[in-house]
Length: 247
Image (tube, rainbow, N blue to C red; front, side, top):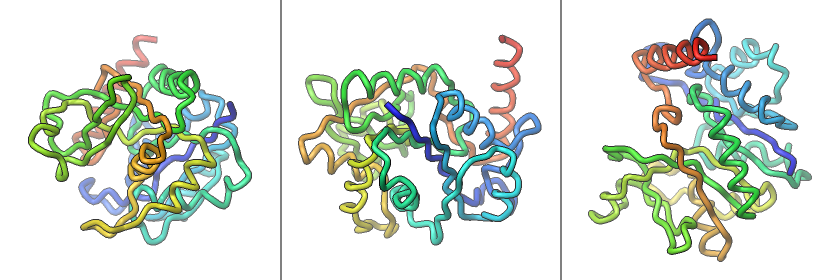
């Protein structure tokens, strides 16, 4: 199946204590998004589209040598709204869409290949990457049906006491069947406290429609960690250096 990769890259990264767009902060001499683009390329993505916003001109300039496409998210109204910005570019596309985050640079190619394999083999309309955390506080929990498919994803603030005991969490990384994704995005709304459009809401629509949603779980929770602080940036840098020594 053909593959297009969308990379979320619109955020400011306030906790980095810098006005620089978050995805442009460097790890080992490269902007962190470089590692995500490289993953998309190693997966033989037909198209790689970065969804940009904060400092969009600077981001385009820094990434000019990466030879990727860009769409702009302004204003920034959530993850679902971000993906909506690619709908015109992909209106005639019928392959799969992989959604990655530009601030998750230590994700491995092996894990993404397993995610795509699960999606293809199961013939799901959406497959999400999950992991288990000793303390899942703050993360969306994954509830399953008896057959192992995804029954529900519930945000921490909406979870019952029993659901909060679940340690499997949503990483925010997904692969979707393209046309069904953009059809479902037309049906989500911003009726929430933040008045934003959330990408996980398309999973609710698929499940309500009786469509199959699957998941692949990585045992290495570190690889799905997003970078929000300079301390996390240095930790990711160390992980990447160690990997390069192992090769």
